[in-house]
Image (cartoon, rainbow, N blue to C red; front, side, top):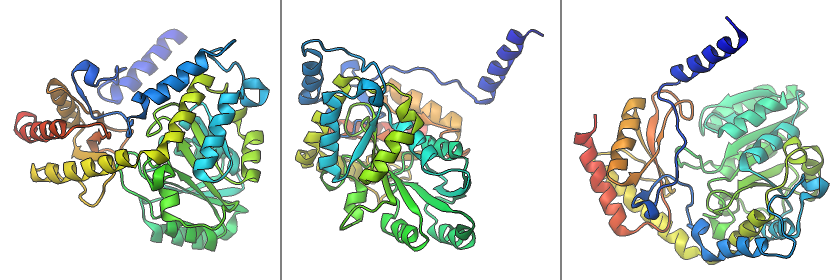
Length: 387
């Protein structure tokens, strides 16, 4: 067998064991006569004319280029990037570094914060980018059961003294379930056991405390300590592209000088940075969109339960998982709903554990009452139409 044949067999075998193949999907929404319940554009800022015009204005500047052309430390950090840094710092109250994607921000930051002499304790449902960053660090890793802080504390009691440094890693709002971490409890444990706390606010940025996120809403800190690091993305509620890290000036200086995904990646295009800066500037002004989003979430959860689907009634997150368990059923439901003009992705292993396949409903503030009613009715019918 030739090397080409061997590699072809490896590719084919891996695809077949993963079940139904994933495909590239074009966006669906009003322009496709379909209600979008799959994207993370929670506040509809990607469609806001002020955000779009900021990108267009940047592109229309004299001698403007589209690509940044270099890493931020080699010449890719433009005036638009500097404006974005300033707007993010005004929002969060601390210095920031921006990345070309949220994934690269998470992977690179975790990989450089700790080394093989350190210990990482990570929630089992953390995003793949956090998992990969933990692995790349070379540190000893303990994965604690989801939101089980008794287990976490016991692990700290037993293991902490064996390592020179330690970080606790969590999302604030978890991407697949929409539930929340207890950030005050995690901060108490971090302080008690002399750890750093790294919080990924990808699904909280823009949505809580006038856009500052769940960290700001839950933790009232007089100053930002060296052992607190916040990660965020610009591609969800902010409606653009990119990621960022918040910390003390010393922490950010360390990341700029040591984070490989920062040093060896070309900066995002200036037009993207300009759009992000405009969106971040809008966040404190759009409480009405946030209120609408949370009201929609509460209504949909209540009505889905009444229609026979079990969803969490205690949450108001725009992420509404409808767990069906079977991978094939999740795919069939997603396909059937698309025929009813609702775009709802089926989420299956390895994104979620085996037996936890689901429809992941992702809400946005632009959804109408009529669209919600039609979706609930479609889900009611799906109980008998889809098997």
